[in-house]
Length: 164
Picture 1 (tube, rainbow, N blue to C red):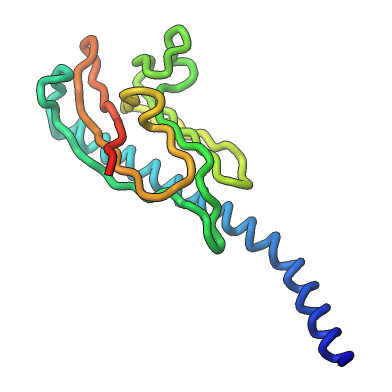
Picture 2: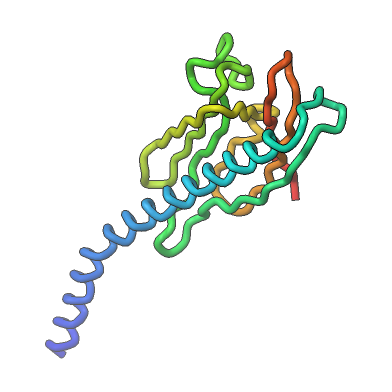
C-alpha cells in the first residue's frame, strides 16, 4: 500500500513539473505556426501582385483563394486568440484601419497564454475588405480571398474571408 501511495505522489510531482513546460511548448509551437501563416499570406500576395495587372474593384480583378490553418488548441498547441491584417499603425488615416497608408502591411496575432506579436512587411499593401473579415479568433481552417485591385491609383491586395 505504501508503494502505491509513493508512486502516485511521485507521478503527481513529475506531472506538476512537466505541465508548465508542455504549456510553454504549445504557445511557442502555435506562435511559430501563425508566423508561418503570415509568411505564406505575404508570399501569395506578392506572387499575385507580381504576375497580374491591378484592375478597379468590381471589374473582375486577379484573385486567389488561400486556405490557411490556424492553431485551435489541443495537446502541445495553444489556440489563436486574435489575428489581424492591415496597414502599419502610422499608415492609418483618421483611425481607419482599411486606409491605404504606406506601402507596407502589418500582421498582429496572439495565441492563448502568449504575448502579442507584430510583424510588418514592406513593399506590399495588403488591406482587409473590412476590419471584421480578417479578424480570426479560435483557430481552424480559414479561407482567405486575395484580390489585386487599383484603389486611387495604388496597387492593393484586398483580403477577405470566404465562408465554407
